[in-house]
Length: 349
Image 1 (cartoon, rainbow, N blue to C red):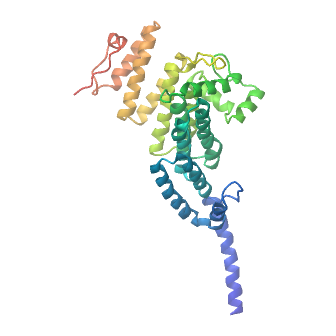
Image 2: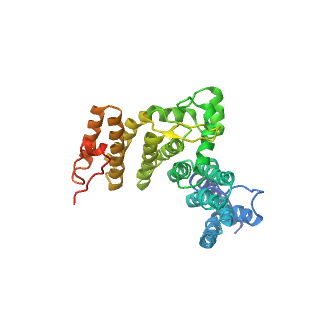
Image 3: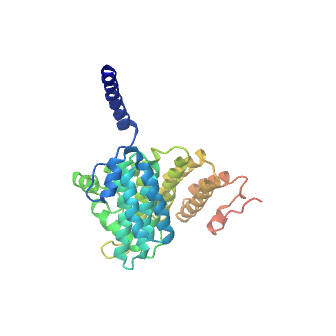
């Protein structure tokens, strides 16, 4: 019996080493003890091991109740605990960032307080969610959406403040047209803002001189990183998260105001139009869905109008040909005169 016990003990030790190696390579590890979270969360995190998922599910059930009751501030803390229990819970990171940027920010009366909560939502994904999940395409896309919509759109009454804050933060590192200046000092300063100069320059080479004072440029920056890890349905979602802000950049993607004087204006960035159309064309070839076709057609209409107004008749006619090509069988052919008048395509019944 003693020999059998000793043999089993040796086998157990060997198996334990194999299990530990498997956990390190294939399973998410539990975070270490953290003083900033409640003791019972530390107990669950460190003590329960693989049963952390059960505890996280229980907290998710509570989170659903808080959401229905509109208790958004409590949701922030609860979602924080969920991410401690399961740092790879994509939904928890995405929801907590969205809750801060949308639900809580609009409860604030002062624009400065709204901006602070929007910044918290962005920082949560950028500074914590993505480092914990560097190959998660959806989190890159969620971060891109915060820039594209929350900062870049006009839906929030405080949107001018968000835009000016971004322009003010980035202006010291940019040329007058908004493109990045590559110096050792700028590299260090932009790295502190979680921006990589090499990646910024790569995007400028591909899409033209993006204006980094503008929110759509940052949406492109983050979504393009997610595209490298996207698969299945997420692949089209990430491409959409790139071409939508690209269209915004082309139509109104150059800063034309004064971030210090609190003056915001935007104007077209015509140098982005051609590469943006090429990217949408690539997307349409890969996924010829109605949604992509409609976005492509809308963008072509705007590009034709701009080219015609600038006196580039040949380019306008080339893009008109593309418009009628992708619309064949779906809407009736358009003419230059109709586009210039602002008419929309008439769909085939």
